[in-house]
Amino acid sequence: MDKSMEKINIVKLLIYLLVFIVVVFFMILFVIVPNVKDYRASKSVHKTAFVHKMRVENVLSERKKEFSNLNSENRRAITSFVHKFSEDNFISYAGKFFKKVSFIEIAKKAYKKEFVEYELKVSTSLKSPTNFYKFLDGLNRYENIIQADFPILMESNSSKITATFTIKVYDINSTK
Image (cartoon, rainbow, N blue to C red; front, side):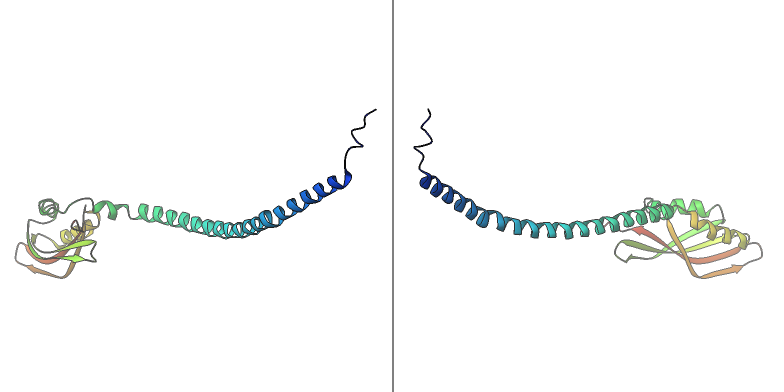
């Protein structure tokens, strides 16, 4: 017969069991419960941050779409800044419409810090005013951003018309 069960002191066993339960209870109370509170606070912070992140991502995707649309709509204007303005190229372009073209640079100034504005006085000689209007219409498709300004002075002689007007050429500010 096995007598090992008779030697067990039940009082000692209950005391050890009670101490074990108290230690486990204090560990639960002082270690796990505060971490659960921190976890819940961190979870709510994470949830609000996630909502803000999703809103920002939605705004970013809308801005990307808008940028893509603007980029495709204004492709010609954007690519026209790649080309550096050349008076020789412009004289050859204007030569398609006019007999004689000459330039005088009036001013060169910063325009809204990102661009440089060249102001040039153009003197031309032409046969008919329709060539002048074709020239103005062709400026929209020219390789640079050019604006013809008023006043446009036209004087007619017997065989030719002389025109004097100013143009503004916008170029990217390379000193910025």
